Length: 300
Image: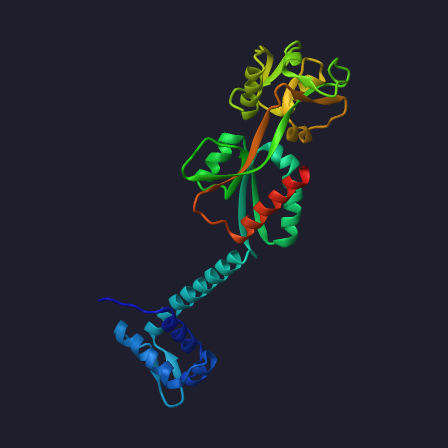
């Protein structure tokens, strides 16, 4: 037997099960009493059950009617709650936004954008995944993040990249280092000192090696570390120098340290907003992406 009860029919039945008469239930629903009676009759015909015992003075649920009312109440309530949640999410009032960003973006760009976002969408939860490039891209591709802000990825047909800005490399050294007083330095000069390199898995390492290749120089790292704060700690201890993108300089205290722009050549990493091609962002996620764009413009 095929049963096709509509949501409207369930709402009518629930209203009738709560009321003392069909006329009272019809009034609450804003429909006529004959229309309500007809709907109840059609439900009973589909189910092959009698749902109400009717007299001229009383209206009462049968045993089958009480069983159906318990289920129908849950169905109607859950549907209405889900619908309200969807409407809230579509308007940006509630929901969740997940963004994958480089740690340097989390430190230098995201705080201002999140401040504006919190004022506009106080009920929306935000998950910040501070990942290196490869994990950030994977988070977007796998649907774990709405979008990523990271260095320009390789070409993926399913992803769209929008350049937000560039980030030039600086020498980081102790304030008493011979190169600290210069207004600029070169990759050639850097190679004369013990070098603290980032791990080969990082985009920072790849960009730094690209600068050395362009300068026709090679360098043997004295130390290699995974995390930028670790590299800076070794610099602060006088164990060498390192080369880092400008935005990363906001990730650690600068006291006792100096940063000097590196020229010949200037190496810049391109920072992009990465989304899945053809997948629309929610209202809230789109707002956060716009605030990140504005934050980048303020850096210029």
